[in-house]
Image (tube, helix red, strand yellow):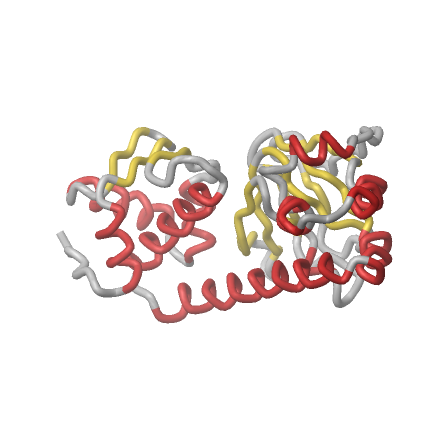
Length: 253
């Protein structure tokens, strides 16, 4: 496992920002707000360093100094910590259109490792320069606060997921969450590929790989899923949502 090397910065024009950032988390920060050309030019000056990250390569390590946020343009990542016993604990999965690195804002050091699950690409966003823009573009700061709020909500939901839900609920909630995130990006909410392994899913949900395999087989038998290797099709998404919410009886068979 090696850290991804920085790539030479690529200049992004204002037209390019408008045309190519619809799948980027910075789309939530600037394009929907109707910013003027002058404000877009300010953003253009800091958003444009693109960095390719090969599969199984670390974007950053725990305790690395915090310098940048990373907007995922392409691909998927996982974040994880190494426990005192030396085991890996997955803390999240991120996809195109989401930010990495917000965990480091409070302490100026990263609290986890971030690894690419496939060949990916990120935009480096130097945080000190972004903070400077917050002072001149208040709406940018407002939208950033909204993104941080969503991240806090996500972590609270994970705590609920691991603390109070049965295994079937955890896995159903995981699939429903993935489906909603893909739908928000204009992709199918019922057919997608799992970029993470069954072992990584189990690690994240506090379940064994054997439990994940059994759950996949059980949901397939119940007619809720079609499974082909890592290809997943949600055949009855409403029932899966009900199962995640605890209102659908879980068939023990």
